[in-house]
Length: 215
Image (cartoon, rainbow, N blue to C red; front, side, top):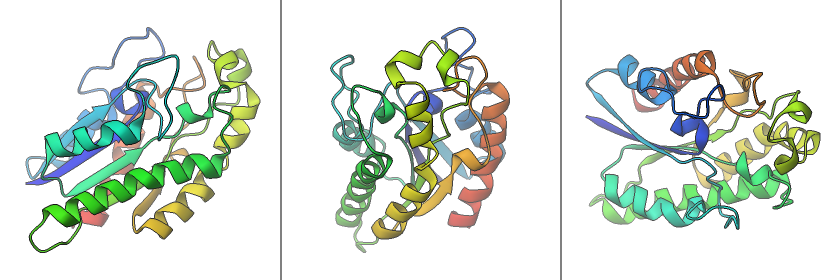
């Protein structure tokens, strides 16, 4: 069985922008991905609302993705592939982070996955890592309930730089790369979270990319 750890924020958790609840397992992309890949794969969900790459959030405890990643990886080990999709929450106005620095933060988590697995495996071969540039902030972010916390269009403009920045970090850190924003846009409800159709489309994209990497 191929174990795939999916490490991310609310768009991995499955936050529903319509009601603030969580999409059902068969609605969110991780659950759909499990069904698509079948019994030879185990999809491990590790999504948390508000999770950042490397930043401590004064408005929420335990949101630093780098700090918690050790626990997530060790508690689910062995893993064959780690999928990392983080960075959207780093765009919040209070952090004032450039897109390139956010991508570098994600790169630190890539390094943790590679270094831990390399030390853990007898043959010292690391697990594979897929670094994913998060979806863009939507064009209607100024009308979103999250507009104030994200700084409106400033966050959107930074998110449009993610693909280029994350691709460079993936290359520099020895990871595979995928751009989620190429496949899906956020919901019209809040310009930040995926709707049910977005989860469906993204699941297909992940299925193809993971098969390309692992098979």
